[in-house]
Amino acid sequence: MRRISGRSVALALAAPVAALLISAVISSIILIASGHSPFTAASAMWEAIGRTRIQISALNTAGAYYLAAVAVAIGFKMNLLNIGVDGQYKLAAMLSASLAGAGWMADLPGFLRIIMTILAAVLVGASWAGIAVFLKVTRGVSEVISTIMLNSIAIAIIAYLLTPEQLGVAIGNNIGTAKISDGGRVATIAVEGSTTPIYTLTLIAVVVGVAYAFMLNRTVFGFSLRATGLNPAAAIASGISAKKMAVAAMLMSGAVAGLVGIPELLNGPSQQYSVNFPAGYGITGIAIALLGRNNPIGMVFAALLWASLDGVANSLQGVDIPNQLVAIMQGVIVLSVVIAYELVRRYKLVLEQREVARALQAKTRKSVTV
Image 1 (cartoon, rainbow, N blue to C red):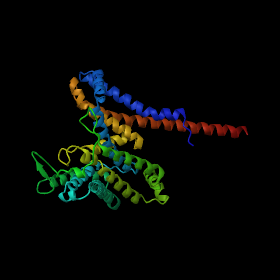
Image 2: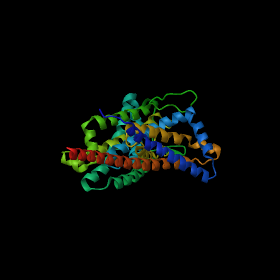
Image 3: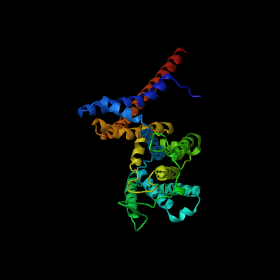
Image 4: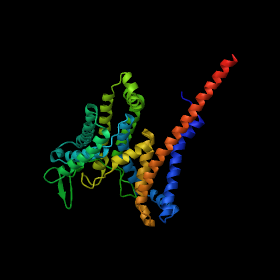
């Protein structure tokens, strides 16, 4: 078994600890420069995170963030930058909501309606991501460019379909898909002292996380995925088809992206997809994947941290501090993590080179002595 040394543990902890310290220092400097007290801000945030409603809201949001992060991480493992998670989950949520709210669905058993809604979201997300990877493997189009463009196209399609002449239903000043009746929704868990319930479909994030970890570490496909991402030339030489792996990775990434909006759709209070549906999960997923280093466990803590910061943002207004400070803190944390991990990586490389040099010197001395 691999021996765990004190130095390896220290190096593993150095990057995240350094990133948190750097982000705390920079955020404090920004607060002081803007005429606010860092201690007042920290106290308000700490008090807010202790409220049950904030904790439950953060847990629900973290589930969606984690799904978005896994969708991004699958692509990262293959050196594919799936920037289109935003478009994939929005289009998947809108079309699956239209299906779930269709009149003929009311005649079906509830469990079947829920399964059909989830499968529809998965298929839409995978299909939309499939366009980008098709362009990549057949025409060499960068997936970064194609997924960014597909985000805009997805938004345009949603705007077109979300009209009374198409799939939209006008309710007062709002317009959205037909509301999903009780039989097509999933029960939530009420918590005493909080108006916000726990979304039971957050368990989807748990299932996806376990499946992602198992796929990466316990399957041939996971090994091929990591091998192709690390060294495409060596992978091809060993018989792995880089194009097939790219297609599989992007389709899997899109399928997970399609699940991002499902907890809010089937557990949330709106019961429909509308212009007020939560946005920005795709970009946040990229940040969380970077924070968690594409690791199944690391992304859990990153998602919880990000969701907690979102939850306490409004509490800062109570002490006359702009809630935009949280967005600044989140950006600083991402930059700090990237810088800290790169510095630690370079330091580890220097240590390894020194160890190799010492081993060679010892071997040379031994041969001279003999």
